[in-house]
Image (cartoon, rainbow, N blue to C red; front, side):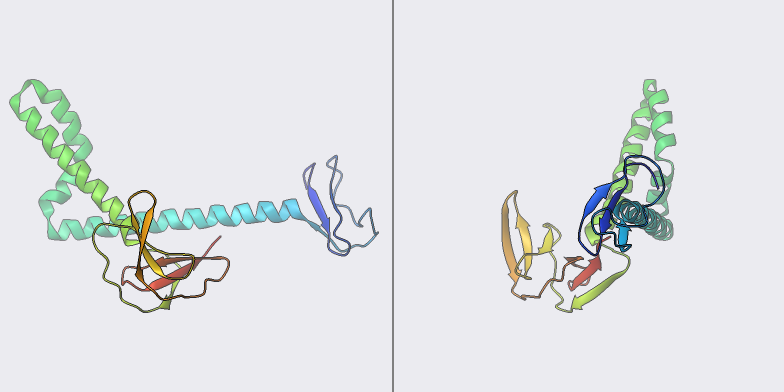
Length: 195
């Protein structure tokens, strides 16, 4: 326990904070019940869970990126080399700008950067989410442009511009609290528990 921890009595609902680091109180100062909870400890535990979930998500994204990089290596060796050596090509290109081939190396490194960014953005656009579950199999064909989401009424909608939206499919699923609802790669409605 640290000083200024926040406590809550489950019996009477009284809340208080400690003034010093003196240990956890054994009874509520209001009703003398021993049914008390350290809300600050719960908060610290919750923050630790969020941190672990973030580490897990980052590891998943790195694994997904590496898997796509291996696919690129198998399918298009030249583009794979551009992605893998983009920094080297850029440095050599900058050093060799006095020579005409330096410009070509800079262009090739820029292509490598763009391809690398498209590999990373592919993860976000596909909305691959670990620990998600399908809610409804509806199989909507997503266009390449546009962001799809589940609106407040439980329908599938698409963002139009900055403030507009268009309902793509009226489905009316009932959203439960504590879940994030989205359209997955297969065009189905899926959800993931929020941390």
